[in-house]
Every structure is written in C-alpha cells, then in structure tokens.
Image (cartoon, rainbow, N blue to C red; front, top):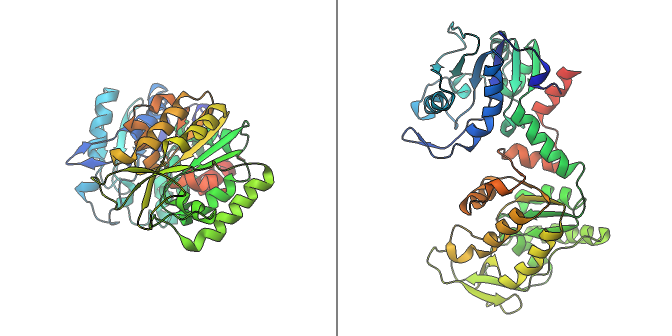
Length: 390
C-alpha cells in the first residue's frame, strides 16, 4: 500500500482518519496514548506544508445528533497545546464551508455524528472524499470497520495512503504473524475461551510455547483432567481446548505445566489469597492467578524466546493479592531480548501499571482490529488501501 511519505503533500488538502478514541471525563483526557501514537503522522503532514484535516470517532453517539459528551473539543485543545497551534473544531463539516491554510490543522468533529457513517453510506463517503486531495488512513484500531471514514472515503478520494501509525502496526504484526523468529511464545489471557478460540487456533500453528491465563487457563486445566473447583470455566469449550492441545503436541509445541495456583473463595478485592497445589483444590476454590512455582518455567521460556505475542493478563491483576503472576510476566517480557508485541486494553493496563511500556518492543493501540488480524481475517481498511495502491 502507499505511504504518506510517497506523496508530495505540500499545499495539498490532507484528510487524516486517526484513532483518537480516548477516555474523557468532565472534559479531561485520562489516557493520551492513542493521541501520542497519532502524532508522527500529524507532525509530518504539518511540517510538509499540507492543509491538514483530522477526524476520529469517539464513543458511540447517536448519528445525526450532536452530543457534547462525545465532542472532540478536549482532544483539539490537547493537540493545540502540544503542537503549539490554534486548532478549530469544525462542526457540521459535511455541509459547512471551511478553509485550512498550508501548514495548519483543523479537527473535524466526531465522524460518528454524521448520518450514514457506520453504514458506509456512498453519498457521505463522496462528501468526505471531496474535501481532500489525499486521504490518510492512520486509525489501525478501526481497520476492521467498513465505514465511511475508514473505507468509503478511500474509494473516491484522488489519492490514498497509510499513515505512519497504521504502517508501524502492520509491520509489528507482520513480524509476529507472518515471519516470527523461533522460538515463539504466545501469551493469551482473558475470562472466556470462546472469545479467543480463533486466535488460539491461529497461534497454535505458529508458536513453540503457548502460555494461558485467566478463565481461558481454567478451561484448559479442566480439559487436562484437573479439578478446578468453582473457578471460571466454559465447559462447552473443553473439546476445543483438547483439540488445541493435540495440535500443539503434534507440532512439538507445548503448554506450560501448571503446578500451583493462587485461589480464593470469592471474587472480591478483599479476599484472602491462598497458594495451593493444582492437585489439592477444594470444591469451593476459585483460581485467580498462577502460583510462583508455575511462573518459574514460564519466565524461563520467555527468556529463551525470540518472538513474543501477548494479549491478556495471567490473573486478576486489578486485585493486588492476585497480581503477582501478571507482575512477574510483565517484567519477564520487558527484560526479554525477543521482539515483543503486546495488545489489548487489559494487557496495556498491566504493562502501564508496572511502568514497563518503554521496555516492550511494540505496544499496539488497536483492539478489535489487532485481534481480527491475528485471527487471520482480512481487514477492510487494508483491502481498500491495497486495492487503491494497485
């Protein structure tokens, strides 16, 4: 696909679709990661003398109705501060005339206020395209959505390309999924195996070691014949877990042997944590973390890895007494010499909780698109960028 650096964008109208969907409360942004990740493309366009327009979705507002709660104004204010530029927020930008000077930037109000955005309305897409000379898709987090601002505009805009963030996300994913350097370790956590089954199936064809956490781990433990008490588990997916185990074994890949776990009797912030041998659980025990002995071979496998994929914490790290497994995992990945790719909200939260975000090779800003790519699905935004490049 074309890159933004492939074009002479001086004095051109450049429409950037970014992913600025950040948490905002009372007008204050609590996490600026996605904005920071979008800055290289924005700064490049401004430095190149382009007439920059940038838009994003924020939350899930009702189309056709302006709602201040979902306004991009706080984001525009933040961008204004860090770029040292006055930035206007353009409301009703699909019907209002506005101008942008070379080397200047405007924020186009939340694209999900526009009727037809989510349905990829053809006429709306054409309106978007008529605003620009070049469309830059930089919102990898929405690459799995076939909407007017992520797909439709790219069908009609004169020139189309990927932004720097979009390209870097693809490059990182390609290193892990298309050409991983062995040994490869995949870490997948989460409460439900059903939501990660296709990801695990895809990864089981590539990895040398599969490390599991959370409710997913419990389902696999039960599939291996362990009594897991009252732990979160999806009995209907035990056959699926057994199939993945067989696939791993057929390739010489492995699951770590769990020897001890951290248990409680109820899911509660004040519940007492007890370390138990996996073979000695009571009928009312609930597994909330992997035990310290179980983590020793896991950290050793991570130390030996050349490629690490990580999506999901090991335990209930939000509760301090059940966080040690995840803490150990974060430090192991951060200290590894491997190329490490981490993605998913809980994963990023765990990495940030221990201040290790700068020690991970690549932390993806994407959510659903990240997971769908790993599953092997073709993402609409990638398809249209490739189509237009040809």
